[in-house]
Length: 365
Image 1 (spheres, one colour):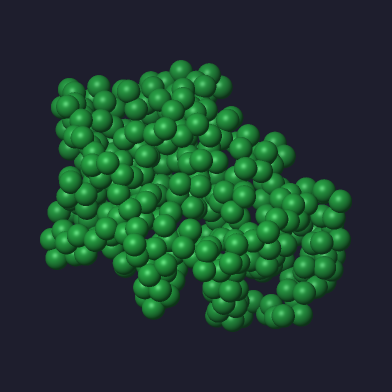
Image 2 (spheres, rainbow, N blue to C red):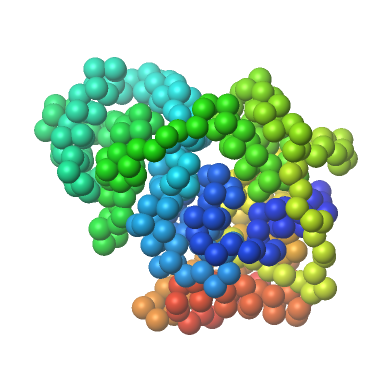
């Protein structure tokens, strides 16, 4: 069953209930990494934790390189703090390469060390001098070098180049994402030692996601249990441990949260760290509600309504040039104070998009 006490503490640690951040880079640095394969969703995930943020301001932080978008851990894309990127990449690159090697073998993609080397040479030549090219343009570059780009091969080649610290996402060209050479986009700086990078990475997880279990950290980081335990040792003096039910939870605690006097609602995007950051999501989501989700039945893939820390529904948006309409599907009928809370959350989203906003609360499923 959901645990409101854990949920309230996570709202605080995740800087949803309150935030003193002034820049998108501060938000991303607090977390260490923010999942971002859905680009627009990731902008809102950062904006939710930044008072008065707009989508334009968050995207500008990517353009000014204080945030970098990169294929990172768990085989997916994340936002990372620019100043710390090389240390984090040094920490994750070996695991990313092994993951990619396993995938390419399993899919019989036909990519070997020679193919990755030829890909790196072709990408370097095409992007040298500050060039930014789209995925389609890079596909042409790689095809011209005699490399396969059909099926998943293009993704594998671009992912390997990111794992090797060769390329990263750059600014968008219209609606198209572009890539740049990492050394051009983010000039080389001194990297921390692996031990220091590991301590920073682990500290950021437990300060932003606590209370969380060892298995939650294993899921989020992709580390095997033995490496995860070693990572905990790196920050052991800072961690607070407590038993909640039958589980041991770890935190680097802020001040205990004060329960709000009225309902508070949050319109979270898909893949938000509030749910994706944990293996066990039962504290904030009742598994019995899985049947009320989409066809895949997974809370990660949905935009979710959170009321007082608990996932209470899903939402979609409908955009015009001047307005956004929020279409809400609650899991249960909402009381009047909860509807007011939803309206306030929708107003915040409208401000983020710089659009007028309306809310359509549908019948409970």
